Image 1: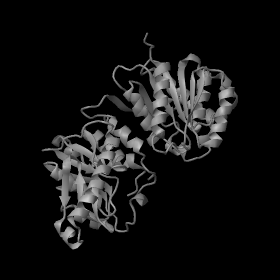
Image 2: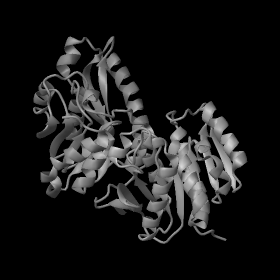
Image 3: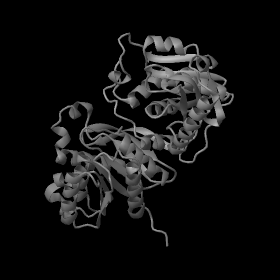
Image 4: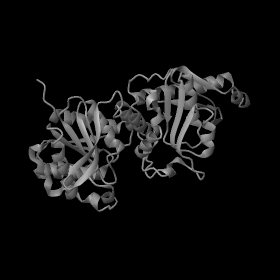
Length: 427
């Protein structure tokens, strides 16, 4: 079984966990790659989502051999047998535990961003990862959850080797694994897209109520009508929001882009609506020529804007990334006051060419300081634009803003720009 990406894996895994909906479960994702999978499971089950942070305690001078694990709440799971056979002294064990406890605390605080841990005592807990190789981390997570008071532990993964599944059945009350291939070398071989999950995506997903959950706001899967085609998307309208930001993805990306989803979550938290959708159908995206047809992409964005007007009459903004930024600027040039603000992340405004002087919406160009070629192109675009414009450079960031804190800065810049230009000004 081959998965498109972690979102696809999570949706398929959720289909195998429907029997748990009435158990009122808690869903815990193992960071980092397990959280996007867990988000889809929590969404389908209508369950609260949290992260489970565990740290293996490695035998000194042989750290790959774990003599135990620790979890939040002071939970310790120790194998006295391995301590004995590994010759681990009390002093060495204490030193390892102190170091791992500090790292556990740091990661938990980073991922939750100040939110309290979801209580699992007496609950059915679904522990989710994006796949299992050796099973050591999953085993530690099951033991830690059990020690935290879970009444029932379910381990759910898209793919794992058969021997690991067999071992884990002794630790969990139930193991749900969609695929257990005999010829298994790495989790990534069973995904078409197994790109690294950034910390920012984990933070964003944990901060975002899963659509359909008991804590959720208004979020729905939609079919966006853009001319004669229907495009798959997700519309989020938190609270009584009127303003909506439409996302135009770059070449090789889609509505599932973890970076754009992280930005969307920050906008939702600020009370702004978002529409994440694909400008191309799957068949069209397979032809690389289409992802660089900026005029055609801009026409799709314009058509989608007309569709959005049938759902909400409020101000509209465009957020474009890479080539999607060119499409956003092209469409904004023909939209007049219909589009109230534009933000470009690592964009290629040069591909909008002669259309740039026609953009009237206030425009923010965000570029990484180390993305030198694109930075030069944006400086040229800043001179060509006749609207209110600002170039914001994120120091030390490269094109994908993968550096620690870079994507958070992008999210904050976009949030502030859209809040300024799309929401009523307070005296």
